[in-house]
Image 1: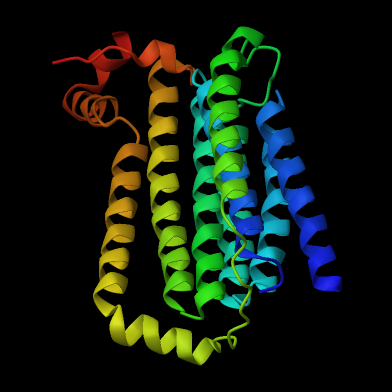
Image 2: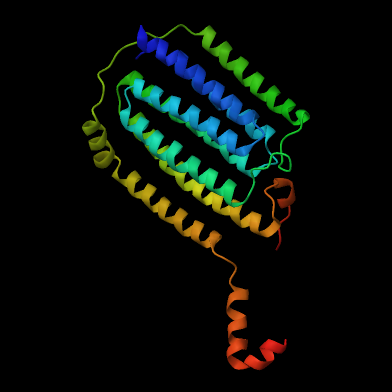
Length: 183
Length: 102
């Protein structure tokens, strides 16, 4: 079955991209690997009969959030792996231990259960999804928009330049320009 | 469903645990910590969409879209805070931000 084959290929690409992203020392390369992984995840979403989520994954995740990361990395000039902070190999040990235990327990749970029957429900059209979103979850939409507004205000507040040095010298210049030059 | 639900859950679990291990390993670098949180949230979205496709209910897709909106707000605030911290100390090393004032 061709969809199954496509799913396995995409899953392999997503796992490989994510693994390379977290082991890469260069932040810009890590973001690029993660974008590859996100694109394959978007096609997996499309195979799972969710075209809206797939499109938003490409537009929002790979298009907006990852570009925001790239923008901050380039603006702050953090793309130097030689002077950046990359983990020593000893710092990988607890991470590997925790991930190994978690993955082993996941595999034990999956193996001990019987496989579920793979029913094939009808795909939901986008019209139905939109009706469910705006008629039954309208309050959630309003809360999300409110939260985006708060995030905008918070980002503006955190990102504005420090104000005290910009206001004080102007008054001195207006009062006594001659002394300002000598000082 | 193209594949059984278990295999999608295995993929999502592997992605989540890779992100969790990366978060532990990169705990000194603020940017890579945020990237690993993105990986974990993406795995959670995959679980929601897989459940939506398994049971034929669009609520899973709606939760995935909500997660995406919340993630964009979180990332914009977190990156603004990274810029703010970098302006104060000229670094993104989290070990240097271990003190509080006041």
